[in-house]
Length: 234
Length: 101
Image (tube, rainbow over all chains, first blue to last red; front, side, top):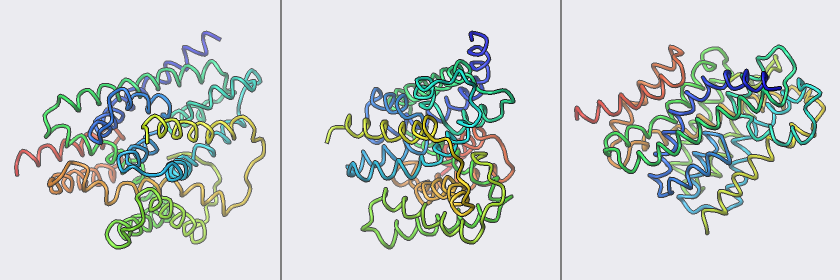
């Protein structure tokens, strides 16, 4: 039990280091949109997801509706359902319902990737170890970024605004090179996004993104059906 | 509206998305169409979130630095450098461009 937790923690360290820099950027962005450092950290602690949080603070800053918030979070984070589904197939029998309720909190792209790569059934202790260390990095980075955003020179904090987007590009680009479908879906999504931004400006940002995601993905599923059903390898 | 309500809604929705399938779902999705749809969702979301928002990410009137950062990010990502390297490289490019212009 203890050994599993320690092994999980050691597997969480690289995730923590990655999270530190990305959540640092989120902290800066959140403060830039008028949220407090405490609020930004609370969002990171309760959500643990980069794209969902970035969209969330956009909606908060724009004074969007709660319905918009719900739909945007569902759309952006829908992939976690698939990852959760996939992980649920390889759980140790020690994973009772209370453990499932607790550990599901920490299913992120990176934690999923580490857990999915394990050859042995997943134990609660192992997942808690990974999640604990990773969340420490995610919340710590957010808090540091939020505080730094208030004291860093403007030129630096402006440049740091690119961190999250840089990471998004780094996630999307490699599969674009390998899969025609991903490339097509990404380009369709960008074109629709540009249309909403500059032509159909009445549609609010959150709904625009939902429409982009659903239309582009439907087109992708129709034109480029995926043969291999393995999920989550972003 | 209080920010706390927004944060609570975000947290609960995000948790339920993870919790429900992890705890209750025992079957596998078999429809190739819906598997493909779900496979593409993250890329569609990330692409739509990034463009054109990235061009405004470095503050008002700094579009040039944002464009420089975007080009560097695209190039570094093309050569499949690690996520952190691409993220920080994009920022560094924007910062350096800001010093020059």
